[in-house]
Image (cartoon, rainbow, N blue to C red; front, side, top):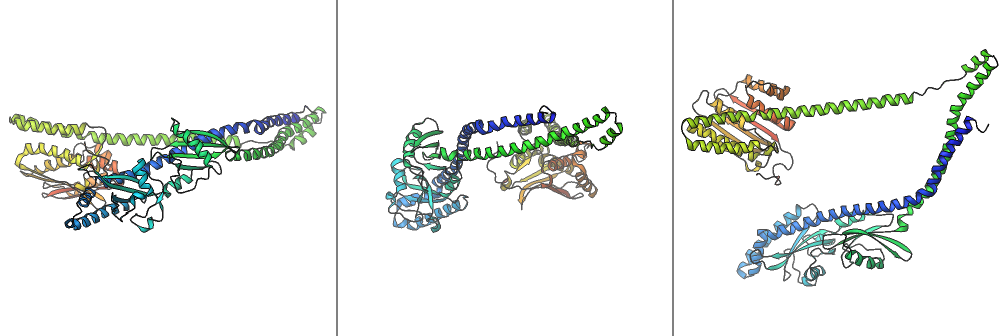
Length: 602
């Protein structure tokens, strides 16, 4: 029958697939075309933005090199000697020129973009070679007449290396100015290979044949490659781009029955304009192919789905049909036949859904457990570190207040004022909670204030020497690692002696920064040193947190350093009873840390 369950399922599946098929075949292609146009514009603008940032990075580097050469004292000395141009100064001129060549060579070698630097005086005299036809050079005329500091790509015969003279370069030109008279005497020419911009520009493709170009306001190509786009399109679009108040946008033009999409972006470098063009037929060629392939694929999927729906309906209807036949036996009173017929029916068991459900629940449970455990560990570590750090301030503040009280009882008002000033510096350093990491020089300055307080208390009985390596002043360290060690050194030096000798030293040894605190006190026994080392290997943070006061300064410092630096930190304790102790903290240098000029002390 037509209205049987099998036929109704077949009709439902066919109807559900016919409607999407019609939509995919007729409605979606037109919508898809508008979406591609919008996405293409977004993609073009994104690529142009990235290329603009890339150009800015290259040109900014060229400008920085030019300015460094201009303000260099070596350049200014060479310029002064060249101005004199007397026979007696000829030797000085040669020496100054050679020194300037060394400077330029060093700057070019250290440059990662293959940039080169040339200098010319107004008479054509150059640092590498003279150019008597300097005024006839096109790039020089563009600079002097239209004030174009960034030139178009050209072959420069005045580069320092012959291998560079066969390749196109783009130059940044900066006038040479005498810093004393502010009179221009020539130019500085910083060159970088045009291939740097060409390679990146060639990657900016839209459609199959769409390309990007770098033009001047005059419509000239900045790069040496050809522009296959029709001249009419450039001539018509360029004035509209220049007069447009927007920095970026889209212009549509028709030429010879073809529609052109011109994406543009105005650059801040040399008044350059970045243009990316694509034709409508080129842009949507893939859409037409996609539409054709979509129709074919949809037809195939439609047929396969019809077959699949028929098989699915059969899997559902067949068991029901067998059940109906079995019930026919019962209707006729043949229970034996029904039993035998039912034994031939194999019941289906769908366990996949159950397995997937259990597995999905397991994954969710494991993920939740891992994230919870990880967060707990992070919070625990952070809490342990802060607890260690908080042990410092009350300890040194209590000792300092005792010193102030002692001096006040002795009516040493000047010393009380000095101690207050030193304490104020220490408190400013301590209360600066923006970061727990400072430069080593700041930590040393902090310990100077602390030792100045100790010297006022102990006077001639205390000798403290600080030896600071200039090369490690900017090395980043965590705060309060010196004060506990110096405090212990002073304390245990006065136990059996009437004087204390302390030396604090910082230095760079290989790939490590050493911080050394040395005294001539009572020393440490082998048992104490072994105990400190063993406790540090087990769990330094727990030992410090549970400490009742014994060796708390040393344990505190070692615990915080191990928490922060991990395997990049090590230490050594050298001590002899009644002769003294030397504690060396060794921190592994990471690349760029010591000479990082981006951090300056306040």
